[in-house]
Length: 124
Image: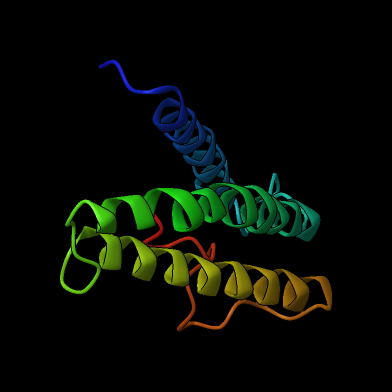
């Protein structure tokens, strides 16, 4: 599909974010195994999601794309813009959970039974 340059940039950024989510899911699958990755991997993943996915990618969507969609009549409340904003907030919560879980493991604790293993559940 042919997109305008700004939209293509957002699409390309989504592909990068998804590739890091894939790596995170693979790392989660290794938790508890001899080849498990150290907590620093999960902290670095959280840094990526906070820095690139949220402060770069989501900021572009929230500052430029979503207002233009709303100006063209696409509703925020009950519409796709509101849904995407909710997803962004959920992503921020997942980043916080991922950081907290990595910190607990670093300090010798374990993941709580009620928290997502990666902090990324439901992000996509």
